[in-house]
Amino acid sequence: MKKHFILIYFVLILFPRLSYLGAAEFSEGRMKLVIHETTGRFSLYYLTDLKKERYQSLFVDKDPRTSFLSILVNDKSYRLGDSTAFRIKVQNENSKPSIVFQSSTLEVVQEFEFIRTGGATLSNGIKMNIRVTNKGEKAIPIGIRFVLDTSLGENDSNHFYTDLQQIPSELALTPKDRDTYWISKNDGLGLMGSISTSGSSQPDMIHFANWKRFNDASWQITPSNGRNFNLLPYSIGDSAVAYYYDPVLIPRGSNRSVAILLALASDKGFETVGKSLEGDISQLLGTASGTSTEELSFRTDLIMIGDVVNKIDSILASQQAVSEEDLAALETILAKLQDKYTSR
Image (cartoon, rainbow, N blue to C red; front, side, top):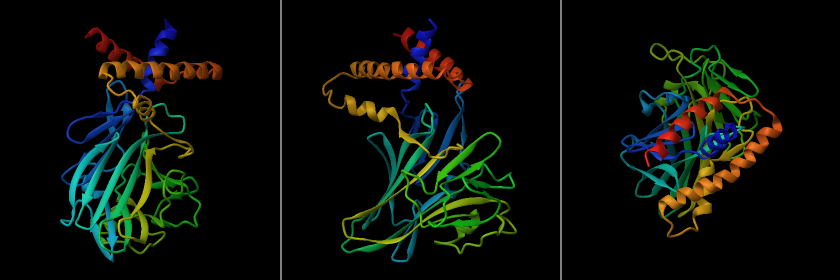
């Protein structure tokens, strides 16, 4: 009986849940992504309580406009979502939600993909792909800036950490620095962002500074390493992180792409990054044209059972103890499974 419970648990726990909740809300594993259609912004949440399905924000979400994406075109800056030169739409193609900003000459796609880092069983982060396409008649230089209004570390003397140092004050990192990821955390939760990591694009500069300094600047601010995170008299201890990708000449009809990883903080960083198993299953089932939804669901379960058996063998071989997270997940999943099949 115990082995049957373990089997059921792994069938479901290894099968990430991707659902379209409301107009622009997506969830998979322990992550929830909310896209704000009117402002072209997004919020990101982590499931901290599996039993109560309680999520906590990984950065400022009271006003999502405080985090933003900008592009620099011919030395003119456009803050996407605020600029009237760009129309906004939200789409979800191939299970990859995205915000699309369109003007007469440019298209900017901010696409999100759920990922798992380290030994995580469930999705615990996202990969954000930013693609700028030149639809105009001539080549133009295009730069990219992404400002994230962090919040978790603001009650700590060190607002940020990297794998190499603590960051108690303003700091700018360039490709010559060897830091690979940064962390903003409180006592219970941490957000991790890529710097120089496989699967991401290394920025020309990543800058930790007061949020209002970023917000007030049309583009890049002059770094002042060692300056505190205040901008008196109104902005006290309000820190943020900005990614800068310097302008590059983009030919007509071509595009420029960069990628940023955001995930639950881990002392292993982005050592291993994997896609959700949902994508693998979708590809396997892609040839099953004409198959009913119910049959596809059943075949998906069969595919997952094969993975489950391999996973159980791995756990038994390692003789590792079952974590509290796994136990809590098991209780939650079994309850949902009972509801699903008793209702038929």
